[in-house]
Length: 333
Ligand code: B12
Image (cartoon, rainbow, N blue to C red; front, top):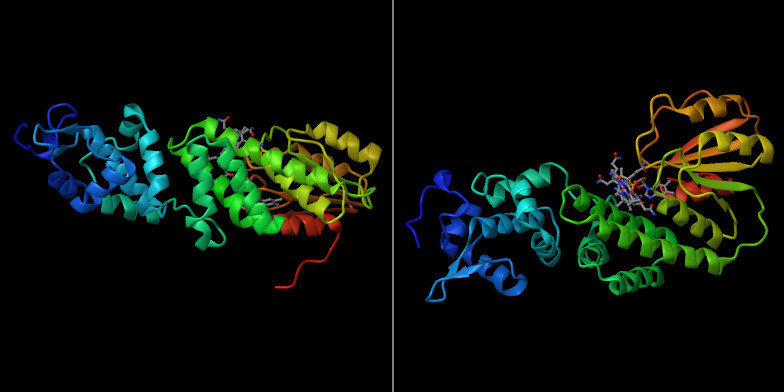
């Protein structure tokens, strides 16, 4: 092996690093690096004739990605799967200069910045949330389905969605945003969850509607899992609601309100709504009584003036959405 040069002069091809030097560069003990190699295959691609580990710059980048995700609270196995799934190009994007930061800095940056905030019961981070994301990364459809079913057996639907599925989806979204997971993993995880939610809706077969409730995605909004979660929870509570799917054109919604006069409409938006939101005009000219319930991070915080008899409410979770559509008072506290 060549003499170990200054980090600054390193290119990707001229040096292979012994484990001790990688430990110094990355800020992870050599013993831990050996464990990552043995247990997760995150290690050197080369060995000397005497069997000593030699890390290439790409190996060092992969180790840094692993350290970074662990620093964010992602379990080691998941972190290893994320790091293993990255090709050379992705690793260069993630870690442009393999010697620029220590792992400790990576972890600190991660913790200050976009942490994997599950929003709810953080004690489950090591459990089903991480397992769902790992199964999605590994494209293990059967494991995903078993995890979804197990969660639904162990928790009621609101808790399954709020404390497990929703944080798992957000983690998957974060990993997709960082390039740690491909869109195919996101599709697989969401499609299989759609199937489970539809099965619940089908099995519940709620009786004839007591109220006329419509559920739809806003104009141009492709995300619809929360609509199905809501339809399933309403069905479980005995209320049937008409699911109109994602991307309902506002003009069609306006026509429906005029012709059908529903009691309530729930509209989901994950994506930020445009400043000139066409829905506001529709609601300013609609004839009530009508409850409009808005859910999802895409809606603005300030709601517009609407016609008399039209009540617009913004809700922030599944339970609140179900209550608002059932016309039930807010839960105390
Ligand atoms: C699955 C998924 C998809 C699937 C959707 C499939 C389906 N059947 O719905 C597909 C592949 C189609 C998709 C497409 C796209 N997606 Co997408 N997707 C997701 C993912 C992983 C989950 C979506 C979801 O169901 N979220 C619902 C819950 C889990 O998340 P949440 O809204 O943050 O939850 C908060 C609240 O809303 C509330 N809450 C949770 N559940 C419920 C339920 C109810 C009833 C209520 C009231 C509240 C509530 O609690 C949370 C805490 O505040 C998210 C990640 C994420 N963070 O959501 C990305 C995400 C929403 N997608 C994103 C993007 C960018 C896209 C695309 C533009 C990608 C592209 N380039 O084509 C397109 C969208 C095009 C469009 N015009 O709509 C971004 C949006 C960023 C933004 N806001 O600008 C996200 C956040 C990923 C990311 N990290 O960047 N996506």
